[in-house]
Image (tube, rainbow, N blue to C red; front, side):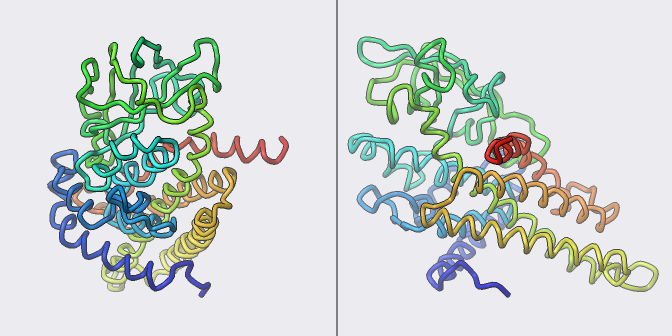
Length: 381
């Protein structure tokens, strides 16, 4: 077998994550789904264990892992529980953290990072709008300057952690008439007048991820809530989207691998016509194909994780990992449902929930069609 990209330190961290999940998550997965969200107690518990501070310096309460492979380990283990857990927590520690560590002032870091690391402050990122999903340059939410800061008007949709977030990183237009140039990023606290949330959106899958619409009606923020450089927010997002996409790919593969492992056990135990269903040639060959697909995909994704840890992962490589892993994940889970037969269509079965949860992975973090467009442009087409 090919060598693992992980060291004994990563393996030890994986064991600590599994112990945390055994204690704080697995006993409550049904409760989280029923409540359509993860309680603040879970965030605080994750913060106490250092899981939310992997990319945050020790002086701000983080653990300063300094190695993206630790993020990948955490995302893998969360995704083995379910994708909703992985997406909710990783938006906070893997997507928002880089913006608030790399583009902020010392004052801003002292203001927000300690509470992010502890889980006292949950974060979200507000990019998507009803008229601007994959085409981020088309967003309409606007921020206008005032004597002492900014006033924001507009709305966002499909925002993971949107219903519970205490701080939202918001992309808004600051130069009317422009597209990519003229977008800026702002940190918006949820208790500011004019900030409201819509209902928790009724999604096909991932009920545990509290996803909602956000509205900004003359929301006033101080000047020092600007994140990064004025009018360069689009560039800031493009620079950090590869990490979001490789994180999504890591989750896709881990999620598919876990459910496939469970399906193989089912194929050994479930009998039809007096023999295990896995012993029939069609099923045996199918499972051989699925295992190979997952392992080959994981090998590529692992190499991308290693490259990102070294600072050499390109946006195109991340796009390849994101779209391909999502395709493989959905293909694998569809076959897993089929192997469970009628039981595979029952909501109480993990395979059914996993199949349902995975469908959005071909849409979010940039649709698979957009990923192929990026790759095609890189080919000079």
